[in-house]
Image (cartoon, rainbow, N blue to C red; front, side, top):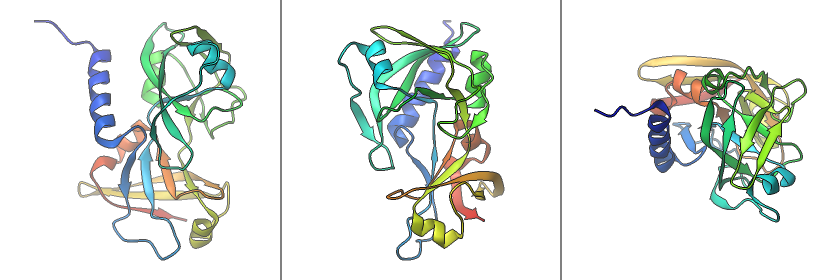
Length: 228
């Protein structure tokens, strides 16, 4: 009997989840409608993904190439691209198809879960997006070329995006810390040190990685709440 390897199983599971929820799609929401003028609380699982510069997009996909939209993400103006690349770690282990998110940025960045990092032999720090000093790199392989990132691989710090009205409601400001309480399957779990990121025209959304989402059984959540 032919054995199915781990990469094939992961690819099948990932396709099922994307078909059901979408790339980085909403995984849970408040069970009670929010007060008037405030956004509903959404918690999303942010699967492994890559942000690229314009130059790295051209290196990987060809001169003059730009990212093409597969689907919009929850935050306005952000999207999952059709384009994917192979990611290779120092152990020569690879992730064959890692999604790129747009729009492009000033510096390329790779966001992995702890499980992904262990598999690849990379030891990335837990960081806020864009804080890349002292981070390890990796190799990205696209259909037209290769990018050898010298830095930029992180485990994204759990965080909550919110607009000014939401920040006022919770009594917090940018860079503060909160807690996220999740009830699922008759159990409750509280995640601490959720970084607050406040910006204009931003919807209220918590981002967790796949390990964190699985740990709190987010798929079966019956209630979620942010606590100052």
